[in-house]
Amino acid sequence: MITQHAPALARQRARRYDLRRLDHKAIELGQHRDLAPQLHRRLEDYLRFATDPRVPFDNNPAERDIRMVKIKQKVSGCLRTLPGAQDFAAMRSYLSTAAKHGRRPFDVLTELTSGNVWIPATS
Image (cartoon, rainbow, N blue to C red; front, top):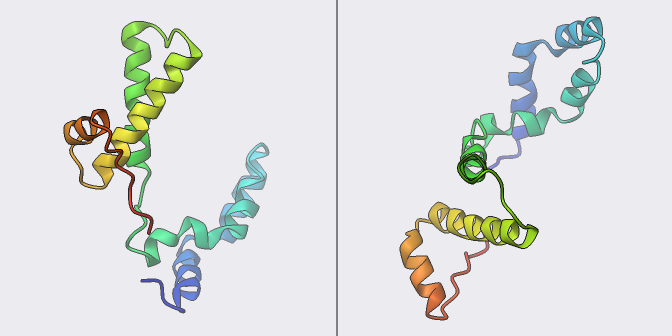
């Protein structure tokens, strides 16, 4: 649960990284000078994982979801038609969402073919 002290706590933890020094280095690198101001503007978003245990530290689940598409491209060479690619993406998204909600893919597909569409509960 996010408390009223969460923004202050995020700022306190961010001080450890001394963003002023990061800003100076970003300007020295030239092409990366937009990074430090963006970090300053969205500091609470970038450090949300430190105050909210529901937020993952990294984006591994998102990368895992993309991996199957890349494997499909590597094995078959490409997704041949746009409708075929859209169908593949919709099916992967449906199965991935079901797995994240603790549902087995086979059970969800079986229910889907019998006319019982599983829709995740909103939080």
